[in-house]
Length: 533
Image (cartoon, rainbow, N blue to C red; front, side, top):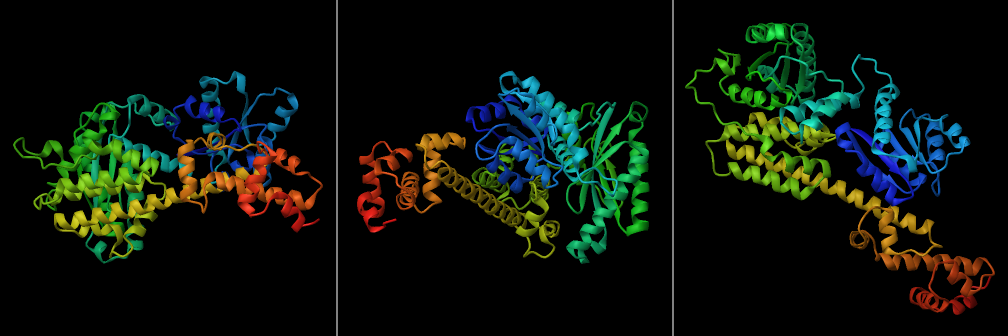
């Protein structure tokens, strides 16, 4: 996903930009909002975004100063879209010297204008990526494509419009007669005796060879699932669609021979029925998964059509039944949604010892989604299973339903811990930012509602969040901070008590004195007498 930060000192502008475009349609994730350039810079250091939409004039640090700072540090990214209420040419002239895509007038901003500029930014982002030396696209573009195909084969798109938009943005052409999906497993006796690192190297090398060889005969996309499985999406042109089975079978046989010659591994593959629409690929993929249960050494390549008409297909777990809950859990780091969804899946197989194949299929599907949809899925899941021989790949050594369910519980609990830590870090960061905001605006009248608006959260949530993640409550923290500022003014200048009260935003000198005594145990006058200049 392309990461976006929105920086504007007007909360309504932040909210308006968030709602102006369906950002997910363009593979853009809003990773943070800021009310000034300094806060935006902290978010840049934390998230390394590709795109910033920022007001040109903000407190603490302006949008121009933010863009200038990033350029002076030698950053090619993020790119900037500048918003302003001012039309003076000197602003424009300075803005265009930085990594600025466009300069937009707030009063003239419409969804169409913003979207046009965002599309220009998307086109420029690959140009600004660090140079690649291996002939592959930039990492983030590659990951976005893999996530796109993962959503496709698991039927995870919310609508056809969302699919079309993302396909267009990724320049993927689906103008074909038909599509067929193959489910493939790498087979080798030596895999079980290899370290995880060597398994990964072997898998990566094999996958690269498979992709290069198949694409010479049939347009395709090879999608990694885990370190033993992948799928091949075949794009069948009009001239090949009629005889697709013969073409795919011969191609996979040749690939298997080449793999054995180079790496002493072979492949077993099943192929689902062809479909005419890319959004039907999930059906072909499910066909392939069901057909794979009949693949064996004697028949290493099998089409759905090869099965006898009366051959009962074994049930294969359909992950798309849980897609909305899983997508919500992964996208929002929703610990409860993840726990409940995993538990519901586990419950389906509890006490059903004859459903080991289906349970393995469910666990595999969950593993594929976790690896592809979580930003650092490989590392995260490897850490969860670090105590297991062969790591998360130990799934393929399990022989009964109970073992598979224990594996799923370990994954569930590990992901929940990770989500909890992520949310805790977010909450701590929010509280730290709120405290910083309070101290930067200490001479202003600060209320719970005002600060909550600045951070686009509800007052009640901010109050609870602050109390749980801080030694004192929100109002007490403001009072303590203001009194600390008052003490400095008392010992460092000739301010009168009523002047200090007024400058720090208190309702009256009488109320200021009450708060001062409550915090320090002394009246303002007694404090001044005990701490002469």
